[in-house]
Image (cartoon, rainbow, N blue to C red; front, side, top):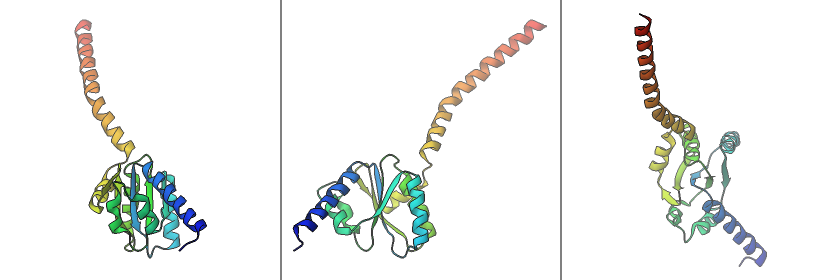
Length: 169
């Protein structure tokens, strides 16, 4: 039986992790076994620059943090080494970065993830990873909105130019 101090510290860890998960929009659970320190350092830097919190977590702590939530189904993948990447704003950044890393490193595996409080499987994470970034999607949408306006402006300008030529004759 652990002493009261240790038990209290673990309960605080569970509460802190539960709060982090609840405040995030997306997360990815990975098995990082066999990853070298150099590779891990590069991965952590890229995740940090994207605003993603990435850390190693004990399976029991994560299991207790998700107990009683919609994410409880993730308990089935909590075996071996486990790390968690949490994103507070971007739904796809963690999936994109970790999938790219997993594709380049055979020993790094994505176990599961969540999106807006719902568990998603590896196939969904792979699909998310293929989505363009938020900025690219916004630019595409804005371009689609701008196209009809630009076409209208060109048509009006053509009419003005044609009328100008007729008046000059």
